[in-house]
Length: 189
Image (cartoon, rainbow, N blue to C red; front, side, top):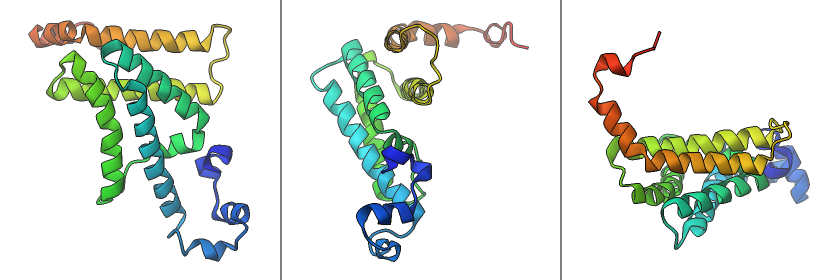
């Protein structure tokens, strides 16, 4: 239902109606609307992590990133409500949600190890990957890409651009670290 109507439009009354039960009967299984969103989020993160892991199994480097990117996009577009839920942050102390969130991100981290990124560089790469894909999928899912250019080609160029950036990230990091503070901020106002 979340995929059909959107996570924010999913109501307990509609869910009870779909299941053919009275709304109070739902409370035997879920605590509240927030509890339902949390349960959808946990399952969505688990599903997305499995999709990403299957996509990159037996692959490495650019091939793994490309396969994972395309699997991410396809899953997100096919499951918009669950995709929205997969981006919900775990509540503090929610061990199950935190664990499944880390597991999904670990798939990305494992693929990026081919680029020998360490410490903060690895964190920056993971963030960039997630933000890049999320941004594209978010715009695509609301119909924001209306120009005539092929959206699939745009996505492929985005993925290849990310791969290119990763391939050359050592050069970028080294150049950035070796610059003086003045050189780093040259042109900034």
